Length: 159
Image (cartoon, rainbow, N blue to C red):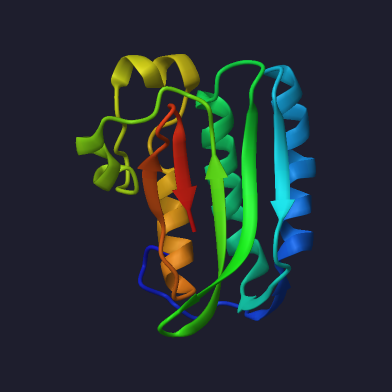
């Protein structure tokens, strides 16, 4: 992926099934933190893409959200289709109930090896590659990723 290679095995990807698989995989880790990953499918959607890359991209975001959400709260994942100038596109939002991220750091979250706070990372692990991998995988599919703070606290990552 990093070598500039853009030819990947593409096929039709059923996003509802993919997201349900991510939730099932994350369930064990979530139980250890006394939280759940809750998935809301507003619009089912199929996209043309690489299943493994998309799954990895979404799993990275969900695992990151589970690390930072307050114990006993949910990580919320939502799939819906949005109309834009290019037609309809699938949108996946993953929201946590953690401390959020300083506004000046939001644009840097998807850079390789970037970590918001070294002390915070020592508590949760990670070296700063998960969200960078997500960004690269999503861009290979013609999409984008962005992060915004929730008004009441927490972070929303939108793919």
